[in-house]
Image 1: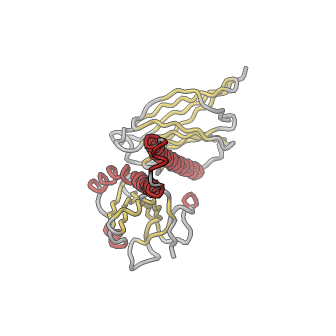
Image 2 (image 1 turned 120 degrees about the vertical axis):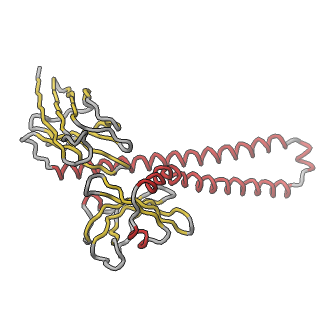
Length: 314
């Protein structure tokens, strides 16, 4: 019989998530008995949120990562872990607030033997959030394709039933063959048009699903007028998540139709994006009169499909 136990304290790293201005903290404990790990968490002074969820992430030196969704209310949990964490050489814990797959570290702690840094953990969580977002996009695409196939099958079934109902020996001898061919071609054309219409309407549902939350953000937060000047026919707002930190959300239209849903983090100009966002963002200047000054690393989502679109900075 083998038994090992490790405990650590997580401490606040970001403001505006505490109750009555008290600092957020928590106790994390892992017990490993005969290869079975159990995780215990108790949080202190963490407030509830209206939007987004809290997640607790657990890391060890062997690159194992486990996370639990704490929803929008801070709670204490005790649960068996889905896989074993190597706690003999220490472990780290990070409490993150996530909104629309954008993570913010709220509190962090690690054992002295754990060689992971805060930046290491932030990068790992950013990659996990991107994986979760891409998984949701792929699941949505599979569902759309399934709906399209079911629509086509229904149309084909209707055509087959009509053919069966109209067929008899006398009809074979007297029916105008060329008229039947014409009617069949018209039905096939109808199926094709229905398929294209279904594909278009279902894909637009990605923006429609996000529309309510976006309009709420646009009515609640102050507008970013510089970006609205940079992008014609667009709407932008600044969302503060602490006293001096914020990100921007916007919608860009083309031909009076939503083309991109955009998310940006403020930054000074650089030729290279943050490593965790490489390939998924482009630099956008805050002002057209200072192209290499302050701006944003911006991620663009296609409003139709939800896919990430990389725009060439040049």
